[in-house]
Image (cartoon, rainbow, N blue to C red; front, side, top):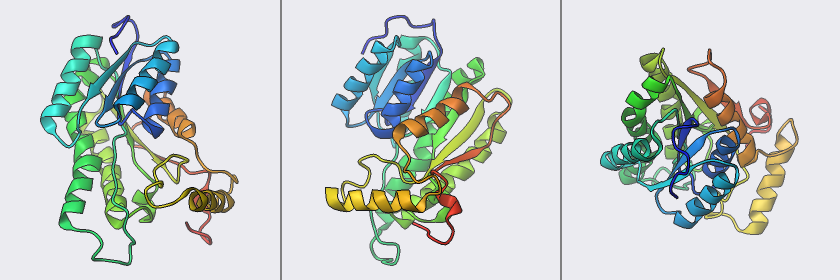
Length: 262
């Protein structure tokens, strides 16, 4: 995944870039004129495919294996991006994890579950921002955090997951204040997105039924795709020079369906 023309285009670093929203975001930003650094932990094959797609769009694509739960790896990933691509203009904090557990079963989650989810979903984003901040400030760049509507509704794969997204929303606001005026910080908060996120707990038939219910509950009559989310991320990262500290919900209007919550 060696870069081909480093330094001639803005550089976007995307964590969790091997699949789903991260992969769609990398492709979208490559198509919008960015070189991309793809941070992945375990999806090497996926990251290689995404890198090939980005190169086909004219971008340099660098793949870096790193775990955002490890501060040394976060700092090392940023250092490698700067060494090989020469700059860093945009940070997309997409890496995330969950533990599926029914909210009513208070014994279903352990202290270790909470610690793992917060380390990746919240502190991981903070670690990446801390490592990237000097370069982003020099570029007068941006951070976009991938949060979730769970951070507002409390609904989601588990209570711990929803709590991490609420914390990530607050972190977004805090960092937007702290890093202004050099760096803009915003978050995109999707509802249910058509990825393989639910595959561990639903077979294909159940997942299709869930998608149908989700679409029926949404005022726009559809579910959100990774490309929908990527477009919102790109808009906040590359445009909106007067926009910071915003939490943009992307859920086909589901938050309006108060009488039929998911």
